[in-house]
Image: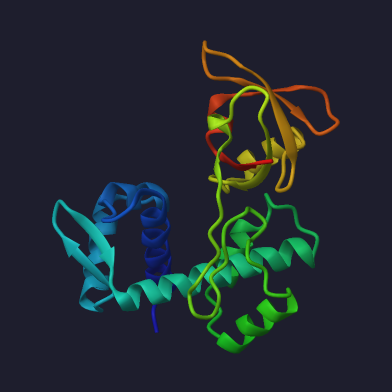
Length: 219
């Protein structure tokens, strides 16, 4: 049995490696978990002793096969619980991350399998992230940052890079969610801002920071 803290570290290593590749730096882990580099180093030593990570000083951390398996299970549970909270209990996509962080540490595999079946085997969570199946496989799709879209191109929102409640709440105010369709009306050279026609709403100005953290597919 691992502690909740140990599980959080394994999942954080998994998430960072998916975004930035391997190995994962101590500073990136400290930023992800809002802790000190010294605390990260102490935990990595514990996980290394349990053969869940490989670590070389100044080079970073990798998950072993066992560590990767555990991290994938945690990600699977987290995303299934987020889907349940949004689809069945009516939570907003900006409300579920903290709750799923708590629920993901439930150990019952049977419960998770039944949860997946109850949800009709979803492939993506409410933020557009792929949900691993029982074997750890997940669905990949063609997607790109909204920022890379050009004038007159049309797209559909399929995911977000940030799950922070303030970011998601801000998107909600702009009527942007998973499945939202849009057309790029203009893109300004000065700072990269984009003017979008979002479905039937009034044209909306999107900052480059926002556009770089929304994933879309062309339509």
